[in-house]
Length: 126
Image 1 (cartoon, helix red, strand yellow):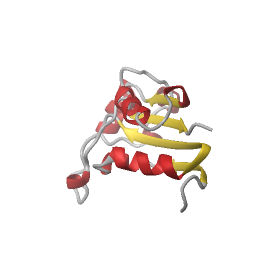
Image 2 (cartoon, one colour):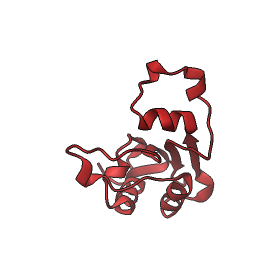
Image 3 (cartoon, helix red, strand yellow):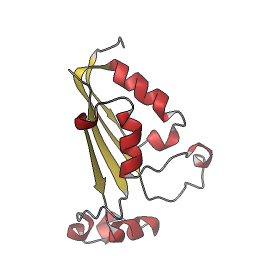
Image 4 (cartoon, one colour):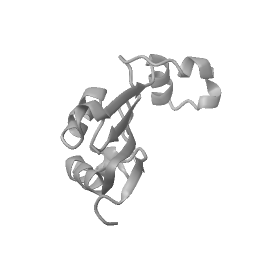
């Protein structure tokens, strides 16, 4: 893909498995067209996978950590950081409970003290 060719990129929850997060953000920012947007999610509270991916699990990103990484490539006012989760969601997740085992309304409550996932929306300057 040529530089500045993409209007939007969505990155699933895999940033925690990329050691060179700064390098990846530089590449994504370069590929985005002016005004293009990157949406990403990264884990904040999680267990480390004991299986085949345990050696490639590098990061947990608090909302503050995510902001610092993204501000190196995107203007601060063009970054929206949203923490998702609460103490019940974190506890349920760490115990391996399925969403179907929980009351959905309890899981939708957002408590910035217990972010399970950090959501990021960053837009490249026009």
